[in-house]
Length: 159
Image 1: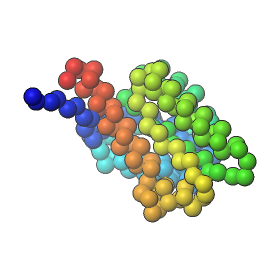
Image 2: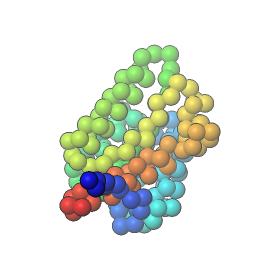
Image 3: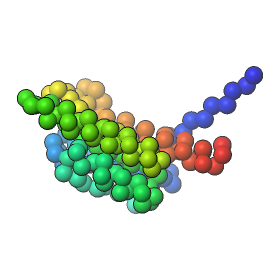
């Protein structure tokens, strides 16, 4: 019996994106942003279809992501941040609440929310994931957003 498989394409042409970027650890988040913009540009996104919104840090990502999702002006959100473990439990609260908050935004609004928030044990790990040894997680988050936006569009069209 034949099976039908639906997947989103990796073309950003005609899609609108908002990138919500934490300023905390900007030496990392700026690299994630550069990676995400590179992915969008390589995939055909028009510059005027890309909006960048800066927030203080990862903790603030969910509230702004929710506000943007409810506006329904974008096809997907790309949330970028960096939480680096320190000597206190602060890391656990910020990383966990940022992740669960962004997941909640996606589930409650139906808007694809790509999670590009690094949660690392060291600065070195963060640097590796923001363009050094382990690729650029901002690039990967943008590609996820493109694919999800296209897949959601297909589903809405009854593909």
